[in-house]
Image (tube, rainbow, N blue to C red):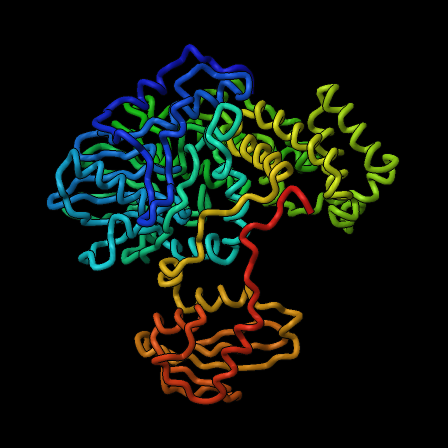
Length: 606
């Protein structure tokens, strides 16, 4: 993207503006003493940038690592540096409204404590989720613990559906890859993890979810919470499938959720997700300018620092709008000219006016965003029949290594390419050597060295972390995944349909081909009966009012129970307290067919 202007220090002025207080030690622990957040580990960022980091990413990490309580405008505060995301607090008539309670209950509670230390013991009178990613809802129980008086919990339409599909259905794979994307297991050091561009890293505490009580279903919808008037702007398909901006007219303040931060964002995040729509993202940014630009004096988001001044806000939002529109339209132009995703990614260059600090690729990148836009429209297949039925990575690797003359020759050539500065092809060739012979120490060591060099030169935080985590796995083995998305707090928030779907994706299909069973779950607390039926290796569900006819097939087993009791059954605690009619062995047969995913599966080795 060209050399940035390091003489422009406005971001540092904005990041420090409104500072109120900070904690002496920004280390957060669980009740049993486990450290789940340590912002103090980034103290080294106060030093000049070393040769093991890109200077632009170093600068971004310096900004993103600032921690404390900040006043955004009168009655609106942010706590930053307590997690990957920010927690915003809006003061009302009786208490405070919390926007986006971080990832973990422990970090959210610590952030709220810092706020209350300075602003008094105000009760939480409302909770707003800007969108359906875990770093914006996971700490809910840290601000609304069990037993708290009910308050409005506001979210965009479709929030629960998308929070579950991303964090439960595919949660195992996404959580594993997130360890690489955020470098959570890397040492925090000048040659290790220095940040993730969007924030520093993810906390690893207790992820919770309180279901919304108020859905925002259209742009222009207004809600008054604790005397605070809020005007909502629905933005589905932007940074998340379910997302919204909102405006505080009385305070001339605009919350942009995660739709406009101080970096280029992801069209497809490297941990995996639904591909986002760059075209509608640009449209909703333009709509935000039209709806709220003239009435806004400060714009803030759930990451990074605010922007003050109407003119600067409109300029910022417009540049982000043009960024995503340009990436989208130019990718489509070249796609329709026959170019593939990787070819377009090498071709596209942003115009000079879109290369400012706030558009740089610290989190998303032009390279992988272009490939994502191609994927959204064209899928994985580029039209070349040679790519239609390729061998698996291991089988391809064995053949490439054979062509190279064996593992030793492949490693030697890989080292040659690395020495000549072609680290990209060196990584490709040495990766083949590792996949062909995972126990070849020379191949693993050489590939780790190449990954380390690529990581140290990356301006993009997730790219750096992926490269360095890959080097770590090659040298030290697989790192354990600390973040747990499959916990009882998350399970209780699921609807029954979602809970059963989360079982369906665990059924070992081949093992279940010849097993047929039907179980009726009578949930008295919900007034309905759910039928789960195993058929040809697929777990099918349907529901009906309690007492209505069951259909053609009689149930092998009927369980009369509550949702909490069902969660106990699924956790293997048996049928104590549950009324069971029929073959109780049906539960054991079903449970025996459910796979438990490996949370620590290998990524850079076969």
